[in-house]
Length: 323
Length: 272
Image (cartoon, rainbow over the protein chains, first blue to last red):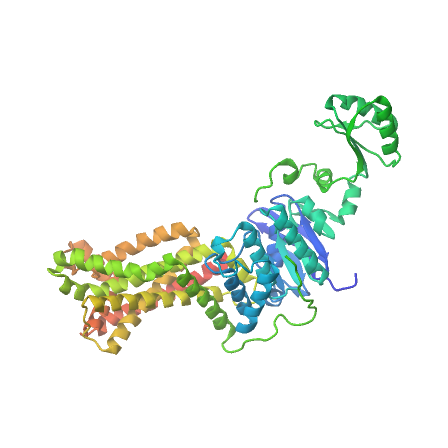
């Protein structure tokens, strides 16, 4: 690629007691890239981020951020990274503006510059009205935004976002996504961990899928999806009782036995683009009312399932509570 | 939310750099300012350093004073130096609770991901607390003067008494810092602090002369550093000879710092 990598991870290991939280992973990320670190709870995402952000020394292997070793040259790394962890790391007893001012001062800005930068960020993150209030009175979404703002005070070149939208409502989640896209366009390298496949799909240019501390797949979302098997034909009849009939029609057209989901949805993997039109016509002839029909790429949930043989947490649980 | 972050590829982190103090102290000062702002902005913390000493003094002087010393005026004269010490000792326990709180919320992770010395957050916390100790001490003394306390010492004596009290609290705050690093849960730190402090302050010469205590307790009181410090503070404020007790108190404070400061820092490094 065109630029020197912002993040280089080489055979990185971190053990806790007997457990290997991170078990020899390797990847790279470049300026302007959003790299998604994807995996279920306990797969090693947070441990990886903590090592890259110099908060946790690796047990073995090497990691460099902006060319600086995270162990030998931690100070140089710290000056140029931003970190937003799973817990909003802001001071509840201070106002939003004071929080940002403090970070500015710790980054050696003069009082005047620290104040100006705080005002700038407060405005950018829609916190102007709340800026003078103590963070204790903020909603969860406001805290998250302040937390993200705090990680941007020093205009980092590499930004670590550890599950940045956990617990956010859809509107604020979209706002965080917009911010991340904007930063990447400015050349910031963003390493994003998430257990939400949708988030990875929306934001990340490239994905690294972790499971039990190992990289089990990597590539673009499209690549991973094509690996999980190509397009699928989905048909859902109005009356779930007609699913068997639909399945028979689909099977005779594609030559493959489809799966029938409990909802009555009939699904079959097919490389044949003409199948959709033909099945639709035959259903019309048979007089079966169709609620939904279409060709779809597999979701990242399908990808994860096919890679690990296990459903992800977000796929298996209907609610997405805070981790 | 419209994000218009200006591009920056090559420019350094900051536009202008402030250079006055060595960075550890400068960052520590910024963090101490945070601690002070926090106290000023949070009613409960403010009450801790202002109202609590006042209430303590009123309770002891008017509830116990007559019974112990036969009159509140005499008792005020005896008790104020001790209550002054007790107030500041209690305030020093807040250092541990505050640190445990910070470690729990993850704000230390943010500090540690910044290019600041690892010691700066600790220096900041303790720096802010020293200001708290002095403030509550001053409140206590002023209120005592209003109630009729009269010091026989000059400015130097008063400053000396304050110095002893703050030195003692500084030593103790390292004990509570070490405790906070081991125990972690802020509520537990608070509970354990009370268990440590109540016997230390009450089984001493802070509130009453020790002559009526049973022998075994007198033995403890005699070696209790709080007693020696209370005696020294009382003597300094009364303007009577305080050399020996002061020396013992300072020695104890120095030993406590020498033992617990490195221990707390080591635990803090391991913890963070």
